[in-house]
Amino acid sequence: MHFRPLHDRVVVRRIEAEEKSPGGIIIPDTAKEKPQEGEVVAVGPGARDEGGALIELSLRPGDRILFGKWSGTEVRIAGEDLLIMKESDVLGVIEPAAELKQAA
Image 1 (cartoon, rainbow, N blue to C red):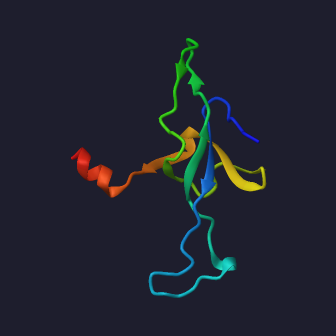
Image 2: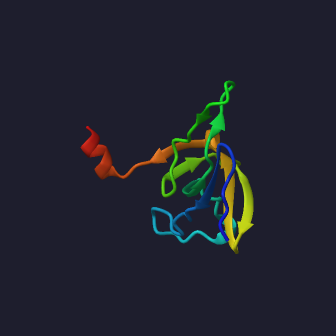
Image 3: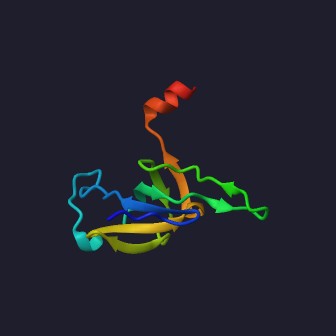
């Protein structure tokens, strides 16, 4: 099954947080918070402005992103837990350090 989000929505797969603290303590499942980092799985075509022109999204499938703790709607598609949220709920894109050095 393939799911295509509408308008300015994106489908995100959560990236699980580390199971150990920086000090090496194993964190039990009950004490873990939901991760606020994810990978974009699919994006909609974009929103329309008042004149009807399509404004494309700046996110692309494969982007690693940060989002708010309570952002999005949790759904289960083809047995996988995903989030659907508006692009405006995304706080930013995580870029690899190598790409940042080349841009400078």
